[in-house]
Figure 1: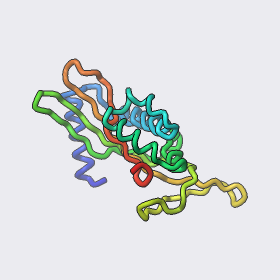
Figure 2: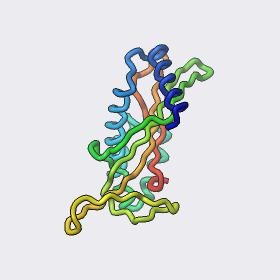
Figure 3: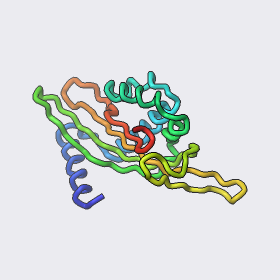
Figure 4: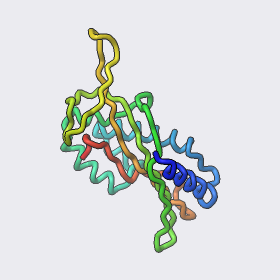
Length: 177
């Protein structure tokens, strides 16, 4: 990321700690986001959408129901990310919202890069090359794809609101479009 974006996100983290949650730590949030990403991606892959209603917003869940039913099996398999297969995680955009009714929200976009062994073609729709990593020697090689996903987490900080983060956007580019 650019130095400006890094500085801006750190400023937002400071605002979150000062005005919303003095216990907020991005390292702790990132660990929880990785766990949520792993759980949600596996449930999506298994088509167990009914188990997502506590983790994912109703609007996103409705869109996912439509998209998941149309996915080929190999793309659906590629959605799943084991915790130990997450290679890199970074924060994207951080936003603080106040609506007209005085409701306060914080939104953090997380980007994940993960390895997956799904049987994907070398080229996926959209003319984008999928990175492949081969483990082992020629006789026992195991091909894995390096895939990306973007999950946006949102929490309401209005007094009396539940202190839970909800996933309000799920993107698996070239897989879940």
